[in-house]
Image 1: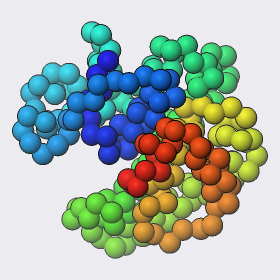
Image 2: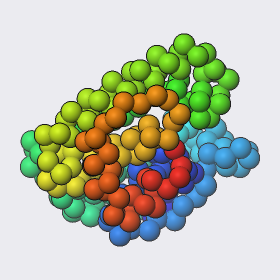
Image 3: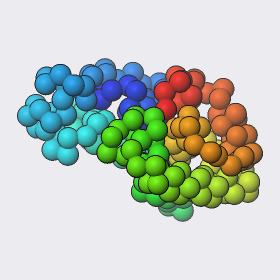
Length: 208
């Protein structure tokens, strides 16, 4: 099993944490660097993933892209119904929070994170950064309200893939220099996760 991508990428780290939970150790190939032979725009990489994005998981003769899809694939491959339930309603609940993380939550932080942490000139506009920070805080407050009533984890009393992908987004929020509301339920949930080796290695590891 091969995992293509940079270990400091938030989406690669989702997969790496999932692998820790599954006791899997894929061979990591560093794609996404600046050298031509490691660039995701290179013909070699595009032949594997035409989207030109990491991570990519290669399992035997199958190449999979999209981080949340890879996480779901691995949990199902290892028959880990605790991480990804088999029952339709429970599984849909986990997948709904994973989809929300990818489509709603992550879209709010782009200008704030890229401008204030990555110092990308394309996101240097202060007004756009503040609007992004405000939208990000609103979504985080939504998650905090949910966690007040969800149980120990995002989808109840069992740890699932939803906790992995959302914790990585929360870690990025925590490390971005914006004014943030005090969200006690998120803080307690992150502390609850902190004993997990995958959290320590690939989530709260000093990388936003």
